[in-house]
Image (cartoon, rainbow over all chains, first blue to last red; front, side):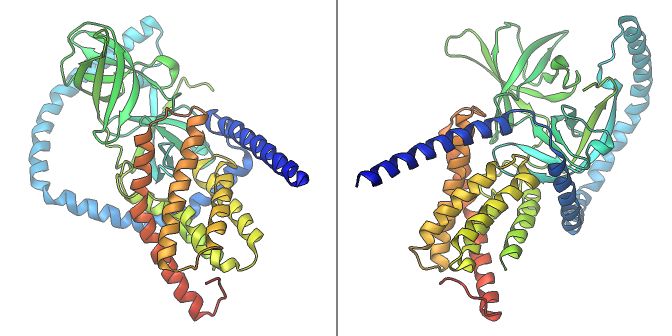
Length: 283
Length: 164
């Protein structure tokens, strides 16, 4: 009887120690920006080949369905584009002048970290949000294509996240929608001629909106104001679109404001992305 | 039979994740943990071999999908222990498979969520956890039933022995 009680005690101690070790181990694995070891890289790269083979017919069908959908309102789109083309010449002339001015100013201030300094690399998404909690996607380009950790990832609509892990032929992108406590992005709201700075603190999946809390600046922020990255933290280059201001509310103490931002990107349907390879990137 | 069930689940989880929206409210996939229920009857008396298979499946999940070395290996091992415990007390049929899938989804989501909250990966939010559970039930129970019926038919045709 006494021996059984003692055995139970030992089992309990072993379980407690194992649980503590497991939690410590998990914290190290999940929370730190660990680099993939060679074995992990080989397995990831090999699985990419299988995934690509399996995905080929499915992607073909998906593309065909999208093509059919787009063909439905082709005439309407054509008319819209025709209008835009007429405006293009004017914009191009203005752009050339602005580029020249920008180059002069950069030379004057010795700036190198603007968005225009980046080169682009297109990639296809091979899986999305597996494991549910991490809000990550995997793309089919890796270190062999020049991808490194912390590079910004965008779509044609705006910023979506950053590279967190890279093997030779695949990379994992952590989305801005991640609930991860370490995943905060510095943004600025463009109001007339000045900027109001803040941090993205949360994301609402149902409304596809981000939250910015603790804005103490009392300036009037009109709905629809553009929200872009600041370039602070040296991860995201400045000026990448995040979204537009949707609603503004005051906190419980009437001191700071909480701003809801409508995301520029539809995170539900990301199939193709672009990685910003920064020229000045040193890591 | 066992490796093919696991491989098919891995492939389908990858394919379906690419088709359904990321923020879906009803169709989140967890086919790989579900495959642990389907493979159990094929182990007959080799219970320890079953637990080793669960661990290896979890390790593959870590390596291929989440890059969290040994995290899912341990979680899948715990899920395997629970499946083994329940299956030893139940007869295996479509209804018990459906109930087991709900239990596995519940356990899988709660376990991972609490580990992530304890290590301060994100803040505790009960609604978030609840949503993750109910959004995973429909698709995965349907998958469990379909794959159970298919494998049951094949095993009868090929006369493969399994626990009833």
